[in-house]
Image (cartoon, rainbow, N blue to C red; front, top):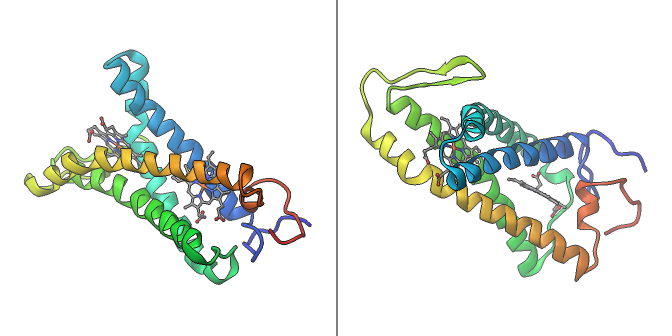
Length: 187
Ligand code: HEM
Ligand code: HEM
């Protein structure tokens, strides 16, 4: 069975898969860079990653927005979560991932605005500085951006852990919904 552009009841289609895997790589970049910053402090390699952080983060927020709208428009036409506790946990887990994928970069961009520094995204000064410093935006970003970003990483680790459990213990085909050639048989 060929993989179509849109999702079906059995598999995610090409667009959902492209967004999922491209964003997974960009998140890896983001967390790898920030992990190095914590481990090594200021080095030229860390500065390189820090220099790409706001741009890649804003790209991720834009892609998350597109993905959420695409997901909503495909809601009735994508693999359903199972019933019971496991299905509810999966639904809540995915909802939590979306919430953090949007809120984490938004907090940082609002902080950039509120701090009057603004932000250049891929060299273009997209976010201006506020006319006056907005303390609560700066404080919210300082308190929550990094913390919630690490929570997002913890949820991603849980997400990958569940895919491994599905595959090795429950031996169902959940991974096949997002990767590989679609099987015709129901999962
Ligand atoms: C989804 C996208 C993003 C992720 C996953 C992410 C992740 C992170 C992480 C893990 C840290 C390290 C926190 C720590 O040191 O404990 C951090 C710090 C930082 N991020 Fe992001 N970030 C994202 C988007 C952005 C954007 C769009 C900006 C734009 C201005 C930004 C600006 C910063 C700054 C200035 C810091 C250092 C201060 C702080 O820790 O809050 N980030 N980010
Ligand atoms: C090695 C890394 C990853 C693997 C193996 C993986 C695997 C999967 C699989 C098999 C599904 C389908 C689950 C189902 O239908 O119930 C899925 C869905 C999903 N994954 Fe991942 N994933 C990975 C990384 C990530 C990352 C980094 C994020 C976000 C930060 C993410 C967010 C999601 C979301 C939100 C869904 C629900 C479908 C959607 O709206 O796109 N995944 N993933």
